[in-house]
Length: 151
Image (cartoon, rainbow, N blue to C red; front, side, top):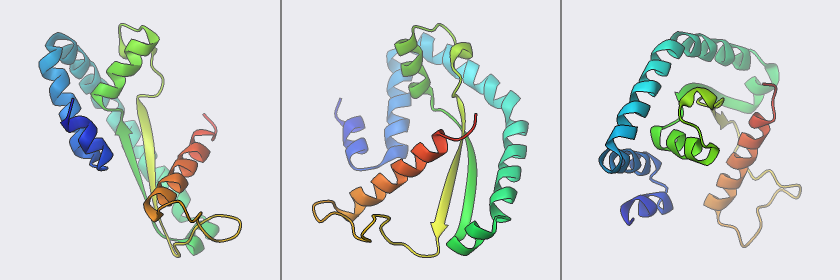
């Protein structure tokens, strides 16, 4: 009740996730074991396809002339949703297994632009918004654009 929200507020996402998983394993051991096993099985089955897709996406992005001019580098990371997020989503949807979830696997694109500057129409971030909040907003907009892509 204290450390997980604190880690979240401090932007320490790795620690937040690890603490949530640890709390889940202690507080709900049977559910943890079942879900952990299901996600491990999914990881094993999906890993070859994810690695292949990672390479294909990275190669396609690297060969794009516009991106070559606008970015220093692009990293593509395949990932599987963390255990606690999966458990929460299953609870919200009233599911007994991960089979009913369609977003367990994802790709994260990390882009280093050649220039860092605000993307607002007038070229400035709002005065009341910190630089960190502005960057987080831009990252969120990027995620929304990626989510809107073809499925």
